[in-house]
Figure 1 (cartoon, rainbow, N blue to C red):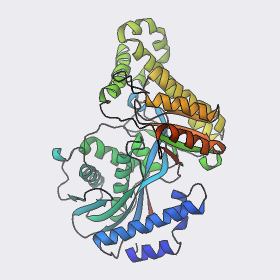
Figure 2 (cartoon, rainbow, N blue to C red):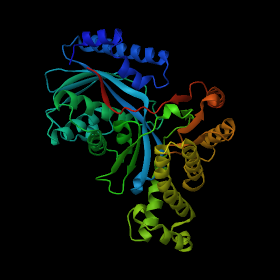
Figure 3 (spheres, helix red, strand yellow):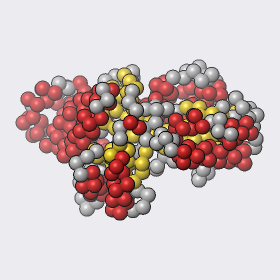
Figure 4 (cartoon, rainbow, N blue to C red):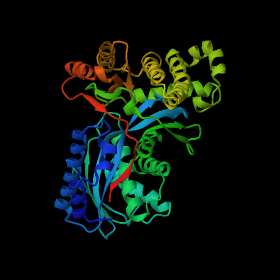
Length: 431
């Protein structure tokens, strides 16, 4: 472990370029590498300005994640495909010899957490201190001895984009604590479970494990939640930089506020169909039995519940097929499956607009214009929970400029973000 001064020297001399290129220059450009290097230097200098120079420090990264396949399958114990992206939370951190964690996140008030008290605090629910305390508490249960550290954090993970900034934060904090006080021995899957625990128990959000897994493991990750306590996780070996396509996340400018009932309705309606067969989750229902019971289910649960269940069975299989297509290097088959996923979400799952506010249909409009711009190439779909927020597109490189321009003419400047699936999950960038 080097000092903050040594970190700066390494970065300025280019001795951190190999690590930075794998995180921020996946397009192979020197300009992207230089931008990543400048950001890293700025974070170390900001740390020194906030906390002073330190004899022991390191750079850490917690990436955002994108859902690639498996739209609304995880809460029914289904299969998903997700991936880390090259937007992340980057931190310079150092032990401070106390029991206090002090974090200054750029643009936000500083936080302080006393690790001598690791109990759940109701007044901290839905806050960053709750995530820090929760991560530390779970790591302590696993045998780590968390102690105080200082960190300066800057983030490029887009707020409200479905890239899961909370998971990136949890993975970042877990990586810092494990590096300084746990010997760096925690594997990515266990680190993801630590993040989920913090979010479920301390933050108060009953999330699944997909977000944390996508941020922690790196690259494309296939996850089977048949047993949520022991999900089957497989890293999918595929180099997206060789696909000839760019990943775009497009912000439609619509807000997720007041959509809680819409999200809850999906879980409730799928659960009602499962209950008809004496099951709690659709993954445990035989699809053949479901198909045979369609007339009765329409009367008992309603047509929308039936359509949403159709989506689950198809999407659950499709997530596995997408992973297989990537492993076989068949990107054309992968794109066809992504398109099918988007159509199923729109027609069967019905999560592209809210029935409570039918005048707001930003996602369907963006999808329609996006399909026109793609002209039968690439793939496009709703991204994440839906009803508002973002869409995802895989765009041929030769159409990227036209696609981005068209999307931003429709939605406004800066609304179409070009991302990359990065091979590295949460990590120590440079010691």
